Length: 391
Image (cartoon, rainbow, N blue to C red; front, top):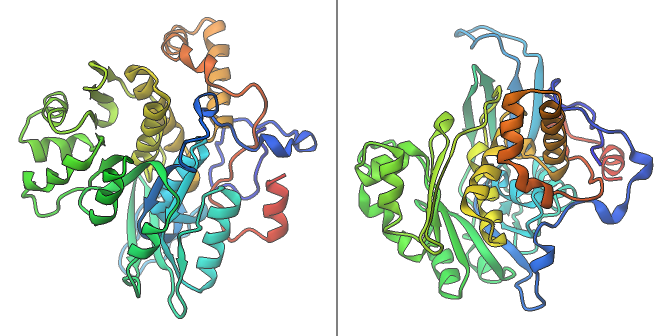
């Protein structure tokens, strides 16, 4: 069920259904892979490792401040960031998600640990707390459909290699191609499907040798700028064809132009236009797209349906403030589908086309209400508030 949450930073959240008194403890989330699960499956669907940041997100700023100037904003959110963006996006879609990360011993770390493990049901059994170490902090300012960030942090006191080696087995891993490769290369050798992403190259060299670790990867999901830079191509469509020579599943996202994909394992090729929405904060949209694409691949959906589902999840995320906690849950997806059908039935031709394109959702959505996900709140939630929100 979609339970309203206090202090949401987005005043334009979609309509929620307040039926907290009917909450079913066994219906917290929806498992879209339930029908295909086998006793021999690994305990996790996806494993991730990286840096967790405490994010403070300022919203509603009319303009950026001048030097020495103080401006008041109309909204403030807080939430786990960094690799937590991917972890939360995956878990909210029903994937059994494990995260290996290093946490400090400060109040930020306490809150993020509780939020990720308790509220978001992410397995932190292989993560570690470090004494006398503080969390990395990012201040993000959402303005003009984009965001600017200031970050402070330190490298972990010790590497997480032993924790990663001891982590529960997973069907897949989401990784940064330009980051540490040793841990996920070992996973790939044991049969874990590696879904890779990569960041912008500030040097401008776009060295193709950076793509060498794709030899260990099942899928690669860069954006168009990254894909064209590394493949020396002039369009997202040409880039995805070049990348399809390197990995079984190549997906290139191209903003408003949509996404292009080639799945060599099935022989499918597809292009999906982006859904038209009013984006207020793009933070984490790519992470949501990657998590949704991974779900579709594990579920064995047709390639075009995978792209459409990932596009929808990203479109829902950018209409919320804050990275990880902007990720949609199945309640958000169900609400969108209901509203789309209502508009289509009322005679809206654009909604009718969208309804037809997304008709596959009718077989995927839960048949019961699921609890609404929490958004980035202006301050730490009290324990009593968190318990009330969890039903």
